[in-house]
Length: 79
Length: 247
Image (tube, rainbow over all chains, first blue to last red; front, side, top):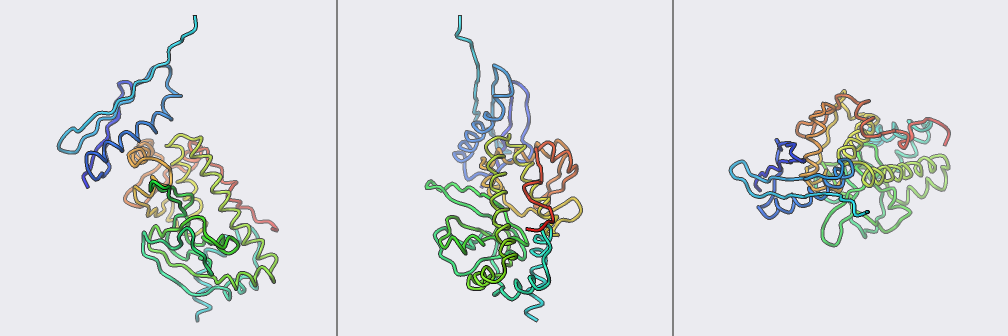
């Protein structure tokens, strides 16, 4: 088990993960980040207007690992 | 001697009953006499497995347990936590075959009630029978709250709702310490209860901590502002039926 940190960036507003979560390996950390961003979007998007980005930076205490990003936009298609 | 020990072990359960109605000394004695033997389960072992056909029902004397099911892909969903004084599988008596499993979350001490003795109670003690029936209805009420919170509240509110529920229930069971209670659940166990990833679960804990409503160190949760936490969680204790009236 390695401790991974999942820092959140919401349309430029950053909340660092101070505690971290233990994951088996990098792949498990990637799966966790993916599940997290999908769950988080369910709460966040309906409350935050027509445009938003959710970004999760995954790192260990020694190295950055990957970034998961979700871009959201509502555009009118009526004339 | 055994009678006294069982009576003491049932104190939290009697307290639960007496929060909802008067229970006579005779009725308490009937319950003590119906109790079979004590059993210990180490943390993270199953007490009951889905598909089991049991001839006893289990009452928690000490510790925490979780009622859960597992999907085919191996993902677990907990549907209720149980604490001291909870008759966790009274269901097994009329259900016959268990449709879910129960795991000891911490080390658990339980008291087993043979179904034969429960059957006798249902035949001779109409009021006590209604009280036992009420206990399973409360389990159903808790499930309804969990479904609503899971389906309609944000993750942070959902977690806050669970903390309010467990604090209030622990208080009645007499296992709180001021504004604190021992919540012996693992990160994974908490995520399984909320239906969330562990990362999201941890983030909710951090969010509630940052808001100043709770502190959470190891397995000890302290509710710093209960009324504010309840308001945030949209928590209303009505579903726990803390009204003492004839049932």
